[in-house]
Image (cartoon, rainbow, N blue to C red):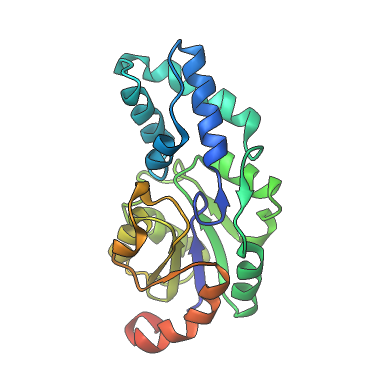
Length: 226
């Protein structure tokens, strides 16, 4: 393993509070009722477009409201980004161990790049990553493999020796299609579904455990470790 690409929402930071607050504020300005936090959790992971469209559909709002909703959401989210979110336990230590193992690190998320970089900065994680790419950085988002392939190119590593660390089927599907080994954390969102049902090379309850798995991944997947 030469590098690790790490997802953001649900993997590094629990951002459910930020999403819920921004969506409720958006809906209030549109004259619509708030959405329960548990419902919002199931919408996370496929980018802001999907999040907003799913929320509007849930409250029975017409699709024609999307453009207005988008503008409101972007403004509101920019103002509260990171205020109601927390870094997951074990993340700083896990990152430190991955760096100590010699892995180069990138953050890849479907969240807009502007919001991703600001969130990492606010949470004290911005300096840990060589590159940070959001859902607007490339022509397609995860689960398409393009973002992973492009991130590997930016790192100068091959997909076969670049580990994807995420919390959802999106991350796993993108990794499989790109040729990256993939490990999923068990505490994230995964669209409200059990993450252990997703095809992956391993599952961890803390990012600290990932560094311990790097050597075993190299041994059990020799083709991926070239």
